[in-house]
Image 1 (spheres, rainbow, N blue to C red):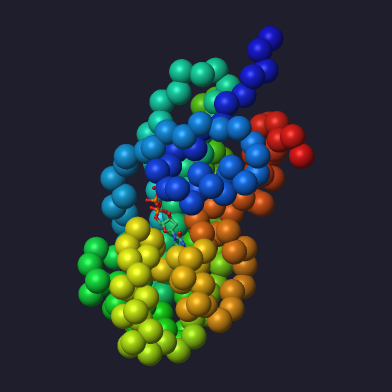
Image 2 (image 1 turned 30 degrees about the horizontal axis):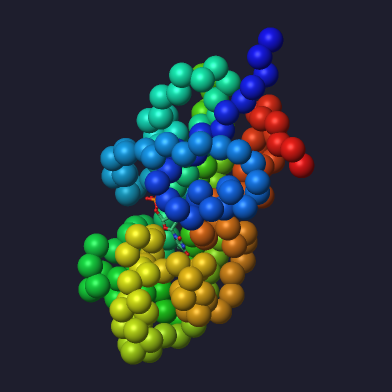
Length: 193
Ligand SMILES: Cc1cn([C@H]2C[C@H](O)[C@@H](COP(=O)(O)OP(=O)(O)OP(=O)(O)O)O2)c(=O)[nH]c1=O
């Protein structure tokens, strides 16, 4: 019997790739190209889990024992989903909204394997400092907001906007790796630690 297992990350996010590489487990990357529109009347956890599942299911693997990972991250504030800003103005307005208050970052993860799908989500609350317009504009000018939900990256210069968080830091970056490892083990994927 062949026990070889293949882990496939269905993502074009450089952050997710780096976070998995840091764990020194071997995996392949296959970028998913799914329509990321969603029904805004759903709960935020449903949105991220559904998108994560769509991303993982969009990858076709010819390997026998493949475990395909999909993930999705959104920022949720006062009932609104903040995705990636499309312009400087949008980035400014997202950051202006988030200034001085707490928002939630949701990341959903789906593991598709041997015809099954296991899904979970994590949520981390993030409190922003009161930001001046100058601080917001200077941050937008770094260019960092553009490929990131909520218009900031906690792993970059965006860390200086954050006063405190409650929850897993890696949920904010886009892949809650600690929970992920436990979920992978639970569905039979061998982890060497
Ligand atoms: C809030 C926040 C988000 N982000 C990122 C994580 C995600 O990559 C991105 C949200 O977009 P996603 O649609 O979750 O992911 P993606 O389009 O980058 O990659 P793919 O769909 O191919 O997997 O925002 C940060 O990097 N840092 C942060 O602090």
